[in-house]
Image (cartoon, rainbow, N blue to C red; front, top):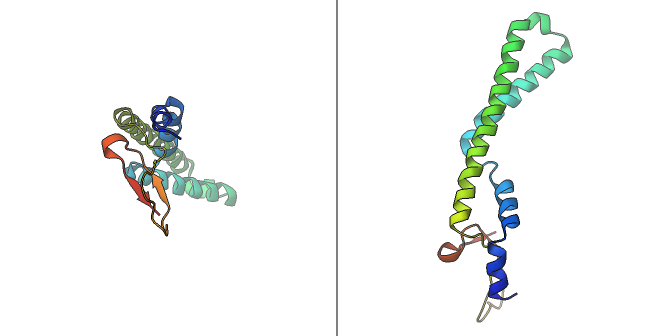
Length: 129
């Protein structure tokens, strides 16, 4: 693979779109709070409905909890969309590094696996696992 092909792949819009879609979820750590609260409310509501305790808990409280759960999931969607837009802007400024071309002498024993990470150009980094 030569450097012109690498440069072409770094600016491929489909690769960038797939990367942003898959990696935007979870970038904003504040998203986890409404996600966990919404899941907990849904689990509680499922338990209440399954056990037939709707009248004991009250229709008003169940309705309020349903609304709160919906608001939590809408909040997750809004925060995820903001993270998606931010990541899209970052990748439009700096190309995505999808491969690293090694030149020169390779080490005799390779003990680490290197995975290329987002920034390309002057800001290329490798994440070791």
